[in-house]
Every structure is written in C-alpha cells, then in structure tokens.
Image (cartoon, rainbow, N blue to C red; front, side, top):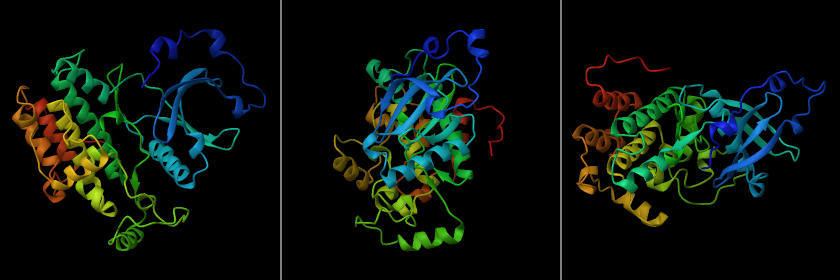
Length: 340
C-alpha cells in the first residue's frame, strides 16, 4: 500500500486554510478533491483525498465501478462502514462520513493513518531472516499482535467477529499506533431468537446456489467462502454458519505463527491446496518450521493453542490470548482491565 507520507498528507497549517469560509450552500459533491489511489483490493478502491470543508487529507473508500451496483457487495460495504464506525476503540480507525457520490454509489471516509502493514513488516523480517529489522524486534511484533487482539476483544464483546484477520489487515502507524483494518467480512448477530433460526437453517450448509438478492438471507450465507484461506479456521471453511469469536482466535494464532517463524503456517501456492492442508488438521510448531530462529517456548505454546483444529481446545476468549501474550512481554506486570 502506498500510504502518503506525513509531509504530503499533513502540510504546515496556515491561516488561509483554517479561516476559509464554507459556501453558504455547501455541496457535498464537491467536498472531496485531489484523489490519489492508495490501493485496489478485491472489491474496493482506497484513496487519499482532501476534505475541502475541514482542509485535511483523509482516506476515501468506495466499491470498484463494476461492483458499485451489486446488491450483496453494497450490503457488505454498508456493514463495513457502520461496523467500523460503531466499534470506537483506540485500535480501530475512526470513520468520518458515509454517503453517496454524484453517481449514487456508496463511499465512506476515514482517518488516514500512515505506516506499514504487518505484511510489509513480516516481509522485511523474512528478507533478513531476523526479527531485528528497522526498529522492530520480537517484543515489538508481539506487542502489535496484542494490540490487534485488544480491538478484536472489544469487537467480540459487542457482538462482532472480524473473520478476515491477516497481516494485510493490521496497520502499524508512524506514531506506533496499531489499527485493525477491513471489517467487510465481519459477522454480526441479530437477536438470540433470530440467530437460533439462522443456525437451524444452516445446519446442512453446502455449496448450493442461493438467491443472493434475498434481503432476508444473512450476508454470512450469501457466499460459501468468507475470509482469506491461509488464515481461516477449519470450521470457517466447513461450517461457516457456526463461526464465532474463536475463529478470530485461530486467525490470530496463524498471525503469531507467521511472526515467529517468518513463514505462513498453512502451506500451498493455490487456494485448493491451502484448503486441503487446513482440512488435514496437521499442526506444526513454528520452531520445527524454522529451527534456525530463536523462538520462545511460551509464545509457541500460545500459537499452538490458538490454532488447534478443535475450537473447544483453543483459548476461551480473546482476553485470555491477550493475557498470555502480555505475560510473556512483562511477566511481573499488573493486569490492566480490558476495554468494554
């Protein structure tokens, strides 16, 4: 991702900028200007642009033109914007506005955070075959994972499962802030009664065709594969209707494996191979994959418990994962209460 550097995004503040009057009849269609593409994902285009009302550079996200009228993608996009906005936590990105452009297509704007994704950091470590690269050491990398877990714990206790945790979706900012990105695959629940009905209806889930235009059909059922295969739990692949917070715990375990071993936990160069390797449920330790690295035994145990194929044998909550990671970082620390 080509995130703008601070001098470009935050120029010196002048009175000409701060004291410019708004038009008497502001036109939101002319509010955002000077777009620069940051990245193009599978469904969305993320850009930086200038908000002419507040005179600042922000992040702008919209669906790709070919998907802008797709009812399922629009529903997911709205869910992502609102989940991101509703989960107000230090490790989530503040959302500014949700709206439609001149063509009637959805967009939403967010704070623009400058830094590197965990994917970029791991790649740099892998290149040097070391955890000591460009200001990052193993302690700092584990702290990044722990901060991401805080965001997920907050989401879980508010009824949201991320379902797509991967190195690309953790951003480490230039001020040391850690942000969990991309809630587009998030699973949210209705009330308990509706949830029971949905679970009952999905017990015989298969890769059959669904009417994706049916607004009563949960988004979690409209596509057979929700997530990124190398970081998906077995139940996420085989019984997506049963996914709960423990699938995020599994995904965090795969990230921890990759941070420790500097290699992806699930091997395979194509999706089908990756899925088959997940279904085999053969668990391997980070130290056996890369014995040349000095991997702490305590962290390896956390990783293996998180990534157990039987979710009943994983940690009971993300809070327990946080405590395990922070116990390694500071064995004599006094536990601080987690955000609710």
